[in-house]
Length: 361
Ligand code: 13P
Image 1 (spheres, rainbow, N blue to C red):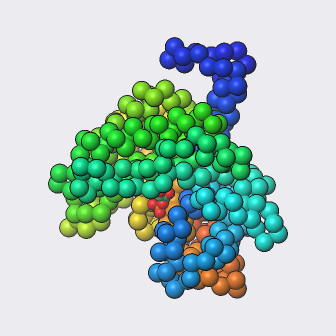
Image 2: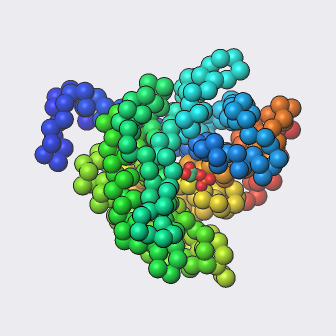
């Protein structure tokens, strides 16, 4: 959209400042899925990062969490592969050793700061085994504050478990409604909403069952996004890939995962969505990269297909760091290597042999 004249969208007029916001939303969403680049999810809540630290015997103090995030954000050369970083409430307020606030540090590298704004998946009433994501109350004011701190995109994650009976329609639609309410508030605040419906891959289900559930979930999500007047070009989708359950007796291979995932996306995600940024969801680092590469190899697609990985970008870095300042460089090299592999997957050019390329000492 150009010019400052009032615009009409779905019969609803928008004010001049909203036109400016629309342009910024579209530009930022496109920049987040720039060719060869993807997003680092470094937005683990204090509870989640403490669990990851504890698994490696690292104490979880506020300053050690800051030092770890600083190591990631200052990794040399990372801006070649990373377009945006999702931060957590604690992290977006922290600064590097030289006093530079983390969002400013990212901006200086041309990386867009983002923020996790949901307050976690809680038990859904009257639905044993199912979750609803909370955090809508007060969200408008929080988004305004985060915008002031530098955030230009946000994330909200809904989760759905697969069993023989679940997820229920009730769980699918309540979460879709909340995702759309979050997304609408984000756009009002000039923040690109990353819409994350995550069908969890725990269980023994087949890839066909994962396909069916993902299909229903995406259908509900896009119905709600349109009903709540979202400007689709100013959104990104962060979905699961379609995989066999992690405990399934026989698990689908890379090509099958690529085919099923692409098919469900083609059927449910409008071509107007600028990009799809997958979560890794507990896949091994190399599987997450191989799956993304296989999908991009089958392109071109209507949307950019990229990554917004947490564990699959960070696991080797955390293992290398172990909470010790003398390991910061090794951790940065490990993170850089994974970012580079996923950068290659953006064009379908990744090959497992590339993993053996020496990570420079
Ligand atoms: P994983 O890639 O570790 O699944 O994390 C991505 C994320 O942001 C989950 O909300």
